[in-house]
Image (cartoon, rainbow, N blue to C red):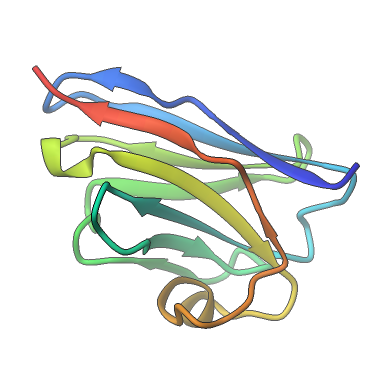
Length: 128
């Protein structure tokens, strides 16, 4: 069964950290650009961080630049999102997505682009 599974979400205080994982089963992530997206209630889905299939390029939205880091572990077939200095406005459901064709800007910025796979999401809540 081909799927992406996110994990690592939870409740954290402002200023805290979380690391999200996006694990693939049924296929290898090696040839895919991977993106992290988030959607808060009443807001549009936002592409926040993406990594190219070769790991040579990354993208960060202005809202997370300098605080979040995307990385990939090929041996574990997993992509991570390290989130530091979390703020209440980071509260959202976080999703990962994979696509074989996209570059990082297409993956993260173009909302109408149809990505190959999506995970089911993991909730991140930043609150004191």
